[in-house]
Image (cartoon, rainbow, N blue to C red; front, side):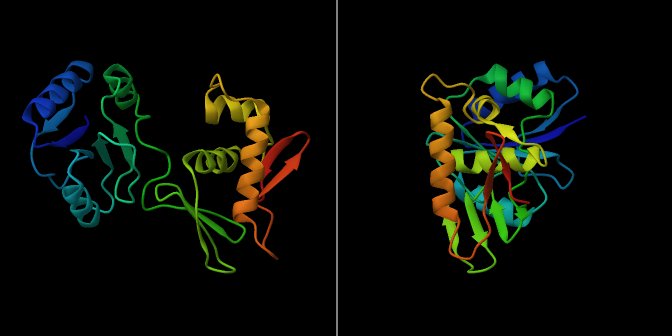
Length: 204
């Protein structure tokens, strides 16, 4: 059984989401109130103040935030832009792939680098400089990290990072990798991404 809290000032949104989740996952237990201590995850609808408050109060609690704008937040594990495809959302919730593998409080460490995926930041322990990354740059590093020690081909990156977008080519991958290296690698710092056998791997 999965226990979910839905927090929204829009009762119609909360009740509709409650209904559809129960139809897809009959064993789910839904609370339309402040999170209880043993809930499995919480859905927050647009209220950034509640988001920040709960993220600080319940550091281990997975949080999904619904927003009408494109934004990032260090307080949410996942941000879903409204309107969203409900069937896809419910399917991912049901098969337990909704939440990212890396939580908001976690980071990926390799060489002297620490990547904070939710904040979209990478920090070098050598110079303590915080470098802001784009979502695609974060996705590239995450995929290479999860793919270690294998080499990721340009085609694999296209499929897993760009999803074979109509405007993406292998040149798109090459350009993003080049710009990412230029942004992160500093004098005397370790190489971030290594080109090998016409593919890429993270320098771990």
